[in-house]
Length: 79
Image 1 (cartoon, rainbow, N blue to C red):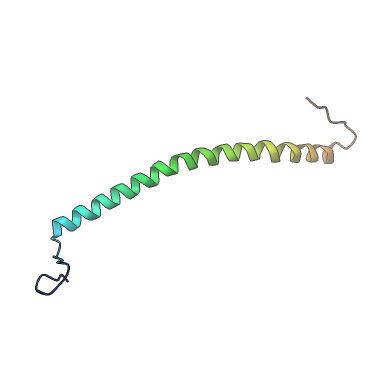
Image 2: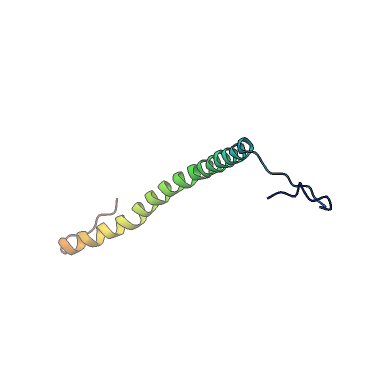
């Protein structure tokens, strides 16, 4: 695994102990999950705003078209 037995190695590499490996894994898991949640918050907020925008821009005209299909003789009143 490591190069601790080789005297001619340019870079000395040593095996990591179990505790050190657990520390490395836990710090990576915690840091990556915190980055995920910090970036996920703004995406979640923006997706809600986008959903509201789509509701306004899509359901308004779609409702007017549906209303014209159901009541063809009524005129639309602009508010």
